Image (spheres, one colour):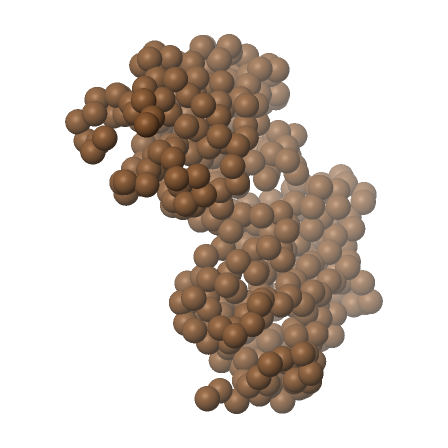
Length: 195
Length: 195
């Protein structure tokens, strides 16, 4: 069967996310495989509900133990916008749109939130959370990473945006790495898993 | 059983939508009942896919012939934003946010799109479309209607926004009324329905 605890199937079509996961998992000696299958994504203001529904749907499709990850950028002055719909907002109004909405706004606090949902044919889905607090920058900076990385300065990152960091550096601060590490610790501990 | 073709169950928790439907349906002598059940809403850039998935889920829950309606405001200069996520965008950045994004933008063309999905335990889901072309106003005007009505001027509406129109007047121009009328015509004709 599968080398459980040693191999994680990551349901995603986002190569950036996959590469971030691969680096984090290597710290735990967990190999990861990218599984490009279509999993339903529901509309919900709560990331955990979205990730959990996708994980349940993905297992129905593939019958494997898998993880999915859902993330969002929550800007306090914009009542949490773009939140769970960050991907759509990025594809339409983009970083320029966010900067326009934040023009003349002093309170620039924001956070990235990530939820990793694990599900398998044998178990109920389980979620792991990660959060990166920071600020929306005044202008785009950097060309690494993806999505809203060029306008997000994580706390403790020396005023650099995520897009000014290598994947390794980003993984020291990022919401996604935080959630993936929690999952990897659990996945390799074996204590709570039936397999 | 149900007085089919004479009664439509409308799955919604939005009283404004329900009242618009009630007025349109009265033109066709179709009564309507508001059914407040939770139906899944998926993330998809295509409104028809969202409405159809909700209609399928709602019938699983209630076992009745029902309609659901999904709508969005698509602004050309913003690559279709806020589109299928109009409700979330309204709740977070609101009309003020849209006006800020549209500041100094000359091309103000936009349209509202509506999809009414009918589904029943006996049939495959069927969708009806409506569209209202217009422009994003320079400022909010009017207090009627709901959502982005105060910043949308439908073509042929005499430069008034939807929020400056009574429900009857809005129904002469609106995307939702257009889709509901197509459904009502079909629903009362009986030609394509098995019941």
